[in-house]
Length: 146
Ligand SMILES: [Zn+2]
Ligand SMILES: [Zn+2]
Image 1 (cartoon, rainbow, N blue to C red):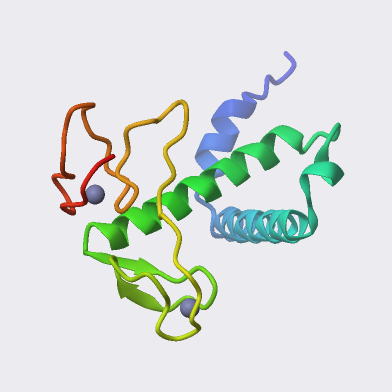
Image 2 (cartoon, rainbow, N blue to C red):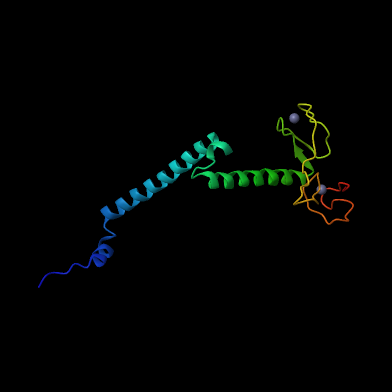
């Protein structure tokens, strides 16, 4: 009778051999390394990409998502400072009290932090908190609402 090899059973029984485990460890290490390299490639790509250079490529969608996440992060950074009564000068990075009109480091005129848009018409310009239409003062920063 021809011997029948149960491959699954053999694999299971011998998976714990030190040599097999050594291979597994190296595979896992290389897998990690591969992920790091993919990350690095992505980093280089986005640093050099613009909306024009990605248009029509396979990266277009991912690039847009990346940019949206970046914008959202910037808004959240601003809000984080604003709820602490602070803001950052966009020119020099100096941190100032939220009511400053000019940066005391570089002299930059400070514009409204949050600009209401058509989709989001009722947000406090100082701290970005949304408000109900007939509210007079922002409940977070006390700013008088238009
Ligand atoms: Zn400044
Ligand atoms: Zn506010």
